[in-house]
Amino acid sequence: MMAGQIVVGVDGSAPATAAVEWAAADAGRRRLGLRLVHVRERWARDLGEPDAGVLEAAADRARALAPGVELSTEMLTGRVVNALVAASAAADSLVVGSRGRGGFAEMVLGSTALGLAGHAAGPVVIVREGPAPRQGEIVVGEDGSEPSKAAMDYAIEQARARDARIRVVYAWQLPVLAPYAAAYTALDESYQEESRAAAERVVAWREKNPDVSIVDDQVCEHPVAALMKASATADLVVVGSRGLGGFASAVLGSISHGVLHHVTCPVAVVRPR
Image (cartoon, rainbow, N blue to C red; front, side):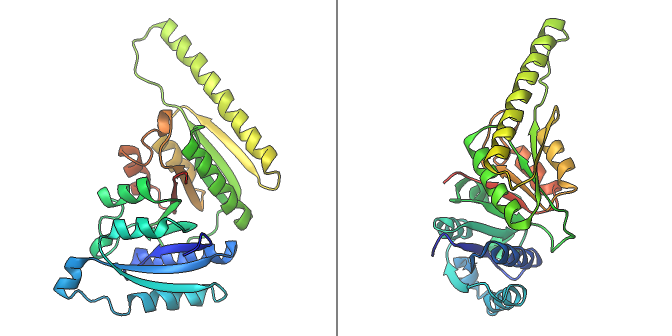
């Protein structure tokens, strides 16, 4: 397997089919190969769970959408998370549906999703629905951390391939404090300083990537709420696997559940390699 391939976890479910469709389009835009992987859990094998035709159907769908993309398929046996994390090690990215059958059933709603988001070797794209009308915008949750820098890199590559605009969202949440003027003055100064730093980081991204349109929002709001609002006009939401401040738990806690439950467009979770 080479880094020039997108790996897709398939299981015959509707979200997995949506993941194949998304990945096929992405592979075509970015001129990458496509590797479709079906993981058969050992318990399913022992119970004789049917999986014949899952890879063939997924491959047929991918070929119909992206006939020029180099395509391969692979059947694996084992635990879904372990197999997909291993498959991601040398891949450009890993794409999965938000829900599925068998081992994919908890892909977004429990330890399986957190395992993939926290341990896959690169971007993990979680696709919830089939193709939607193009919005022309990619939203990135940014806080200056290393994972958010990796998220920006991925978002810029996606934007360049799609000829789309990037909207960088920096969310800063006010803590609950006693109503003393001095405390709120200090908080306001801290927010202003962080907001300026966030704006300066965006200026640097613009200077490095003059061919990509990049706009930014600095908001005093819960990160989930900010990303949910921004996602209404987005083709893709990109976040880092861990972060600072408001994005510290953006993938590995309640915030991740909020984003993955309520953002209906594809979500990319990017972990620095």
